[in-house]
Length: 255
Image (cartoon, rainbow, N blue to C red; front, side):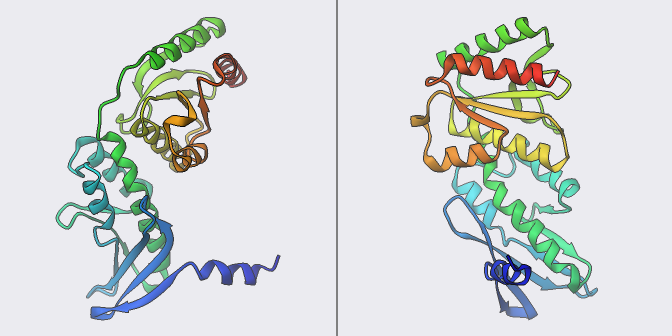
């Protein structure tokens, strides 16, 4: 594989066009849930720096999905981007932006803003309260059994992210902690993905396991994303005994 050829192919994923006021628009390979590309806008500032923003597209999609950026949990997540990505939430214009100190740093700022803009729709996970179901209680019984069998201290229904906004159903305090999220809904599955993404950003070794009732409850796209954005995403109905063994193995292996 030739590195230059690969670089050339990757660059084809970006389309740059001039805009008014000597600005630029950058169409990136990142996409929102509806399939539209994430487009970043660059405007020169009087001090020689550049404002790089998403023109409020992520916020618009989030609000269309029924979730307000003013929701307390959403505000906390947006605030955390400043530390994790050096990306700022503009409360007045409802858009994500970063400031590039020079033309040479515009590309890096654009990638950071595009990544955060694409991830912002995950905040729709906070739109609804989690629902209690028989399925959840069955899983909770398994988790309590594993706690007894392994003697690993476990906490239940506790926040597992730095901002204390994402609650996990079980947190096994093994040497490598394990968080289990019972995905009773699409929103709950997204919470698991958001938690995993957060651990990656801050290099937290905690493992995130999502368990859902069966594959018919979610679309192929949701399942594919969950398998990528968690350490494990497993169905319950098709493998109840195997799930018990899986959790037990994970806990003892990391204890």
